[in-house]
Image 1 (tube, each protein chain N blue to C red):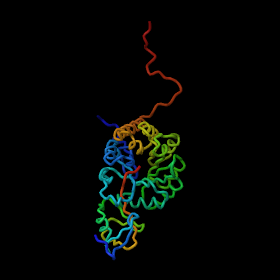
Image 2: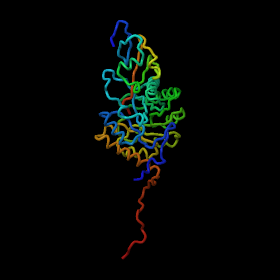
Image 3: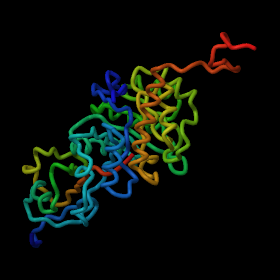
Image 4: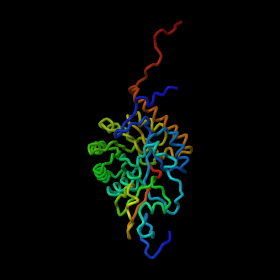
Length: 264
Length: 73
């Protein structure tokens, strides 16, 4: 069957092109084999990863890299758990040494229950990381002014939240996401808040370059099936965006011609 | 590796560890049974480039962080 997705419709970030517009997280899975199977089913080419201390008391524990090959997938190391610019820079310098690349996901979060992006700290960390040579994809609030400022600082992708991390509520503020997309010259990704496939479709219909999903796949009853659903959802949304939807109207418009009707 | 009175006392990932005098970062990683291709090392807040593991000698009081990639969102 011919695929209309991915052929000549890649998106590009920091000089790297991707056919898949679904970026997936690798956290919260019950085990590494499920992680690997779900990512395979998602069709994703880019995956987010965290940087943590090696467990010295269990040195034979399986490693993510044994299941999700960094040769096959572009690892996007994150700064989850970092609360200051210094911590973020320190963590990503280690990631760069472990992985050998500069493309990173900056996220500086406030405390639960919101885990909302701490924008003051995010600005400071973005500045420090860009100065240190990193290409920064930045998780941020759905604030068009903040998004523009991050782009002007040199961030290579803007990633506003659709809804709080892990909430599964979908895009809560589509107007602001759309404003951010319309003014941006770098890719905009909805990161966080996707609950099910149509949330991803909706984000793509708004014109996002891609969508980042973790919890909605990892915590589904069947993560592999949900990964496949997300793949289809993202593709549907992208195709619909490209096709151009009909305007919303407050009245009916017959689908069948009103001429040539038989009459008695 | 036996720990002698001349052992070099360091900290690895927050845990105290005694290693043989003059041990290199490469030696430590081998002793810990880790794969150099899958980890990154920070020594006293400075990255240790992988290419220098064999040359960098551990000194008493060194604080090392050895990290790897795990699942994350």
